[in-house]
Image (cartoon, rainbow, N blue to C red; front, side, top):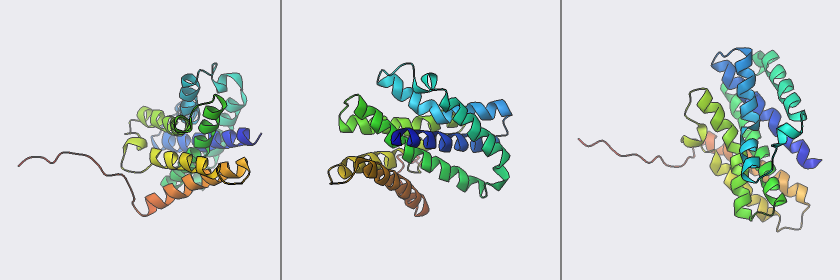
Length: 204
């Protein structure tokens, strides 16, 4: 039940972030739903295909569809109350990657993958819904930009396996890793910490 709650919360957070991007692009209501949908389940769909868990989770459990519909309705109705539009998008996106990283890691552990593979699966789960969202909205995916994104998923995943070495309840380790991801990304953006860009200088 604990992991299911995390999954649903991640679905809500990513669906709302998808709505905010779609509304910024002035899409119609169908477009808003599609962007919210792919943002919420895109990474999880790729994860399930990679680990051979088919049909993918949202086809087996309609609760995800209804959750996304509810999140879309909420975001559309209360969009004017989501102050600081860009900050709201950043916040929901950050919460989403924190929650979904741990969902992906748990899925990896359930099929007996090595920790490093679980971290990779967690990063894919957290990142690729946003990649699909940005591509459909004609944006360079945030995962490929200077702003940290996948890096914090990797750090959070690694911290989870470190927390598991401590004598603490496994659920506490999950929560601690989620907090690491969210706080690390917020601090990285606030203090402009990022991976260096690799480019060639133009010759004179």
